[in-house]
Image 1 (cartoon, rainbow, N blue to C red):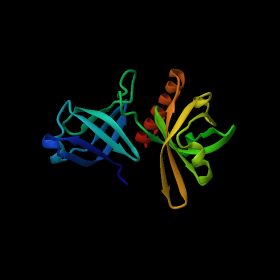
Image 2: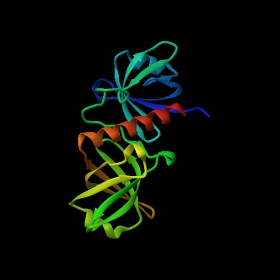
Image 3: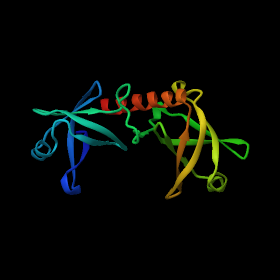
Length: 197
């Protein structure tokens, strides 16, 4: 079964061009995709684009056109992170961890859904914790992954979504530079793993 990637580019007059292209390979931060007549026409060398894959949306730049469309993803090296949009990646089963949040003096465990350098989404079935989280800056720490060991800081609840019986919590994180680097490396590892499938 083919893997498809969504590519988004804003054209003139605020028109959004969106195409789905087949992923050929991923190598050294570059994504090689099939090319279609419309992508040939609207995606030009040097264009900034957004790349959607699974539940990720990553910034990229068109660096090659010919037999394949080649997009350099902006997460893949020192100094290439965007100032505002940090890639958010789904937490994979084999790269899973637990988030412990201190609520009323007691650490409670939450299952993460996704993570970026600046935030994460959590799952809970217990709505009784919500009043104790709303409008507060809460201490948290991450356990269960060697590469994220010791990551701690504060988080703030910024969104609540109810999906059937599951409550999804969106949180902003405040980390020191060393912990931000640990999260960044975890995000990069996850992105590389997902694109290499």
